Image 1 (cartoon, rainbow, N blue to C red):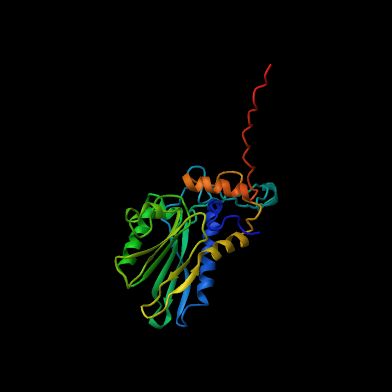
Image 2 (cartoon, rainbow, N blue to C red; image 1 turned 90 degrees about the vertical axis):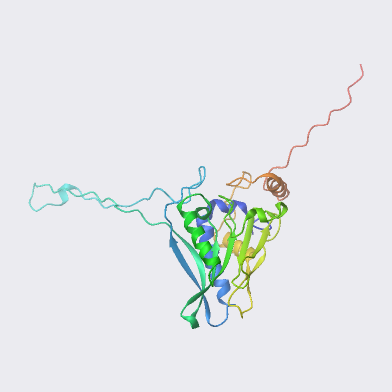
Amino acid sequence: MPSPFPGMDPYLEAHWRDVHAGLIIYSRDALQSVLPASLRARVEERVLLETPVGIGDHPLYPDVRVVEYTWRRESEVGPEAGVAVAEPLLVETEPDLATETFLEIIDRESGNRVVTIIEFLSPSNKSPGPNREQYQRKQRELCSSGTNLVEIDLNRFGTHTLAFPLAHLKRKDRTPYMACIRRVTRRGVAEVYPMPLWQHLPVVKVPLRPDDADVALDLQALVEQCYRNGAYEGTLNYAAEPDPPLLGAERDWADEWLREKGLRPAKKRPRRKGKPRSR
């Protein structure tokens, strides 16, 4: 069974690392077959400047690792009988670096020049701190370079970080999820895709070289593939609020929608008061 939501499933956001990895790989696979012969989609990664800790009780990266050690008793070793040799404790000295992936479309005929970068924004990009600052520096560089930038925001953690001022968008078009396209051929203009919770996610146009036609990236198909391949059916608790919780019109719509799907109990109707009996 597919996700019960017609568009983005907000309950997937609590599993963002897995979903993000799927979005990147499935996007690469979808683009590879439709790109011009000399272009290739490649997965790249950047090292985060600090490990994101999440918001509230929701961690973005695990803070505990389970390591299996092999321990031998002192009586099992030793150069001479009756002489105990101590075994050292094994202690990790450096933590693993936290990284995030993104997509590059490169031109093999031009020395692997980067034509387009595709980003699926994560909480680390949208939460105040060094990671967001690092991302925004790269964002500014790309918007003034010869590389197209495609940003897709399917996560409600953090603040607006897409490459356009949110104040320039009418309030009715400010949806929980959005995408932004910055083309080399249209400096100073952002193509914005609003994504209401109750609508299918759009097919966005991915720009390439100036003489190339755009290629299509079906966001709805990607999310459905993440849901299916991640085996999320039966594991998400739709009776509870998602993490982070929905607000306002999105919360009211989702509550009614999930009740219609039978994933939340129906609202109890208030008991009608009968006419008082005459004595």
